[in-house]
Length: 282
Image (cartoon, rainbow, N blue to C red; front, top):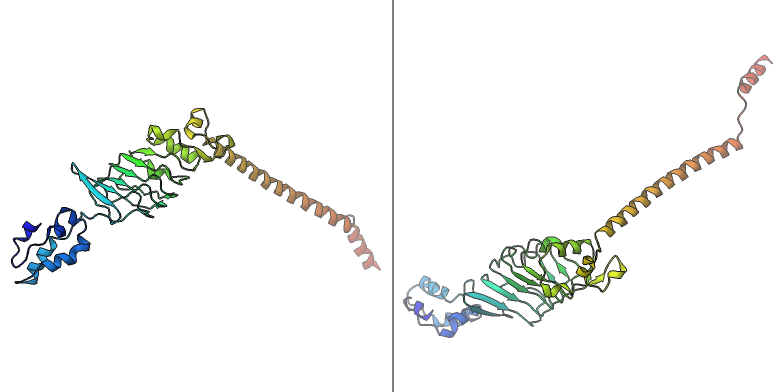
């Protein structure tokens, strides 16, 4: 960087700590120091052009993370930083992102959309409870590994994971076992070491609570049949209740008419006409 500034007329060389490769990651905090080293003797345009060389375009690193590069692959390490959300300024050329263990509670929509080169995400041992349907939009094609183990996840929208080709780690979460989770696990790529620790914290069938879900499914359990059966029973009860109400209404109506008939007896046919004729004759 110092060599590049030699071509700018009327400027002094900047120190290496300001604009060398590692200093570029901290360029925003050190720009005042860069400005102090520039002395313009010609025009403001020349000074501004030289100052741009100190700005780390697209190579910044989140303040709470460490960015390393090996063989052209950048790793962003944000482990044990007490983070409560996913950093916003992760470098676009990141290949590995480690966010374990922290205090992240949710993965919002498009959280990694600008990280098209990302191949591995480690979000284990956080406090994640909610994952948006579009949480991994933009990284579905290239992602190879996703670790969500050791969180507080009870359910995941299947749209969030079914588009991924990544190998998933989902162990040690308080899963709510049901049809949606059964369908998700049937279509997802699970890491072999993660399978036995996907247990049911709650389930529609009491005997499944505390047991590995895939083991239960392998023994013939079908969680998708339970909701359908419950729905059928509820429908039958509703129809039966409707017919019972209708029958009660009809019976009440008939009984009411009978009581009115007993309280106000009608005259036999023709009695009224004969009475009227007699009164006329008199």
